[in-house]
Image (cartoon, rainbow, N blue to C red; front, side, top):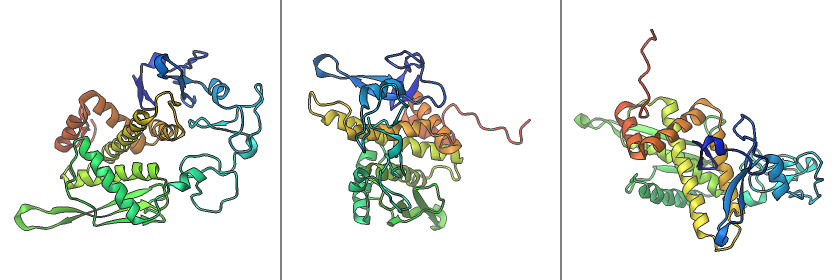
Length: 314
């Protein structure tokens, strides 16, 4: 099977529900659509860009201009919004929604994302404590641990990073070095769901370190496992919102659609460590379970089923 929007689909079922075209080709956009079902329960199907636009996108979400049926496809987002070419200005840093106005900020945000932005270290700490509860629910107990500092920063050491976990070892005689996490850095101003996704990833780094997993771990393995926890948090948050929706309400609310967009971005990420590493960690957890996957990484430094590289080749 294949993961699409956090759901497992048989490969033959990853096709548009209207035109039956396969949506597995690289670069082929696909969108999640909820159709009315029995007893008010919506049925989720996949649509190609053309049929998703027909179902959801009659007008530009910013200027309200009506799209012509035979015209050029607008910019489509999994949130159910579409934007005409005139409005595809600088996108929101977090959700990619065009802002529709001049914004000189290094990381401009749309109004929706700005409304939930984490802009104080107190709010960040509350979010971290909420995430500790979620980690405990899935079997990872941080106990009373919190980082020495949780800092909101304007930039992280590497330009493409949004968080960073600082690790330290302190000598303690014959018992071996004590591992600590003196600080976690989080990019200032990320919307709540975005900030929680990044924090879940960084807290996974902290947990692997504090639990004395092998050091150093292969970057692809460690980043893949940490991305897996961020992905699992998004899935749980999306499922919780689905469960809380009133009966008969639109199954895919705007908030759920934004979470699904984040989930899909993770599934499609192209780089070696954060993309391939995540997909390998996800496949391992689906095949062997999360506990056995972590146990394998702890004892061997590798995901279960991954052979040790031959030293020096043949």
